Amino acid sequence: MSRWRFWPRSLAGRTALVLLLALTAVQAAGLTIHALDRVDLQRFAQAREISARAISAWRTVILAPADRRVQMLAELELPQGLSATLDDEPVARLDQPPIPPPIARMLRLDLLGGGPPRFRPREILTGWGDRAPTFLVSLRLPSGEWLNLRISLPPPRPWHSETFLIAFFAMTLAAGLLINWAVRRLTRPVRALAEAAERLGRDVNAPRMPEQGPTEVAKAAHAFNTMAERIRRFVGDRTQMLAAIGHDLRTPITRLRLRAEFMDDDEQRRKMLADLDEMEAMVTATLAFARDDSAGEPTVALDLAALCRTVLDEAADARPDLAERIGYRGPERLVVQARPVALKRALANLVGNALAYGSAAQLVLTGAEGPGRAVSLAVEDEGPGIPPDQLEAVFQPFRRLEASRNRETGGTGLGLPIARNIFRAHGGDVVLENRPGGGLAAVATLPG
Image (tube, rainbow, N blue to C red; front, side, top):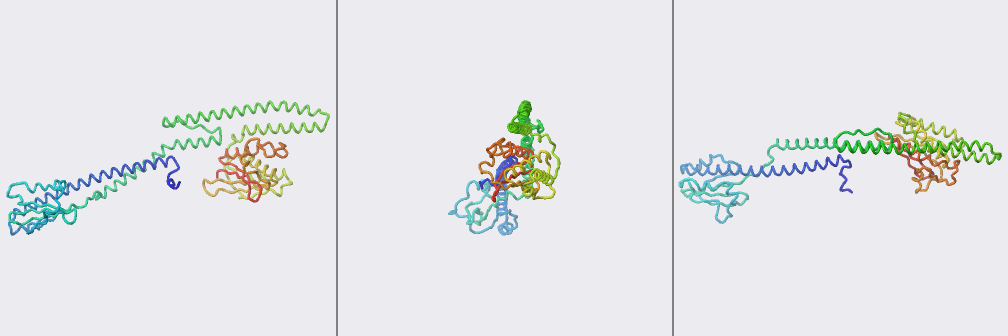
């Protein structure tokens, strides 16, 4: 995995990196081709200049009077890489390797043997010098002296132009910026689709995606909107079905309650009324869970710390025997964007579970540590905890670890699912953790 440590995680980053690497490879290949072509051109120009000056030196020497040849040769302006001397012996020898034919053609040494007979060298010797690539050319004059030419081609300088390199890097930078802008613009619909999916996960009635842009983007947005509409229709049908069932169930429950009132046996009447109360409470809780009334509540700025203290105070009033084991730790004020009624219901469910199963409820609120960080909220109890393999299972609707099915000890099994739905609708979540020192902690998060 360490090999991919610098590989971007986002689609835009990966696409931009691949395009930049491809651009760099193409630029490097083009630059290499340009450099090789420039080297060949420089070699050709240098060889032509050296050839022309060498021929000029020979003609100067052959036409000059014998007593002025050395002086006139010294006065010649020769290019870099060419030197000429008049000596009694040749510097090129027959035992030296000859100049390669491509170099000889490039230097146009064949022109030295052309022209009128009186201007032609009596003998031409060529060879490699001791320091390659230095080429030696010895031309014998009619007087017997030798014009020795030492030719060393200067090293090529393909990057001698500073403006070229500046222009190249400026062009590369401009191309990189253009690639980054284009990739971000092209991947913007992907980010919009991800944000729309996130909104749909929080709120099934989230607004539709705009079906605009390129054909592929518009088709993807249309498919997403179609999927969202089907989900909304499915949820609506389910809610309507449960509402109808609940309405139909309440009618016979009411009739049974009336009939129970006329029972002569007080004990049986009390038990039947208790069962009917439990049935009605279960129907009400089921309908509330199915409707998810919190989804329609507007989001406002609220003081989460004050809301936590209010929930704890109400819990202490409802359970005065456990009031001393109910406490709050956290900031005096913490403002978040949330749905007040729904969030209060979720907190009440968590606190109620802690009191019912752990005989204590310590609420610990921690503010966001920086921009984009989550607000943490933990409700701790002093109960026996939950087996690790059941920590997630208890969030399933109607799932109760208390097997008696008695509402006095176990509830309906919808408190935790409702709380999780509410926190997730806010963009957070809630999980259960066994505390190291004993007891259970319900840890909830909210966007900061």
